[in-house]
Length: 217
Image (cartoon, rainbow, N blue to C red; front, side, top):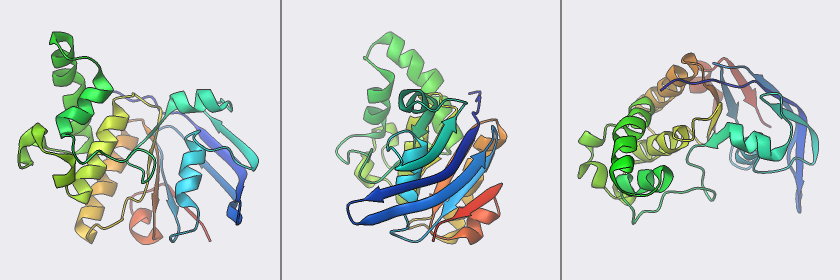
């Protein structure tokens, strides 16, 4: 699975909500093949910032260009979201195979070929070994660990063949060793040409893998 990353340039992005600023004056630049981390405590606006960069939220002020495009629709076509709470959560009653099926289209021989070729490659790049799951690809999403769920979210995003991958809450609920493994997966994806922006609570672990870390107050 080959990647063609896009350049992201955000300047002085700010978002105001009903109760005040969500985030303010954020600037970041991420080039093709780059891994950028956004670090901030709960309530710092890191998820909203990722959604803005993905073209899912409009900033109140500032400028954003993804792949040289500033239009929301064009940004959305270039960007893909990993698992994001409240936005694209997995359905616990559906299996890993069901989630892949929803992305790949109708059943039948063409689907099985796409599954073997495309889905298999996406799962491998996301680091999710379905043979290690309790019931293989038929394992329900609610039986996945946090690490496995995040990796499935990455695989589903990769099926869109994005130029920009955004992954939220990389370190949420993971022991340090698992956190290292997940950051290493993101580093490998970026090293292969994909532009990756990921959020986390603390900058220390992210700083070992990311090219740049943007800290939110």
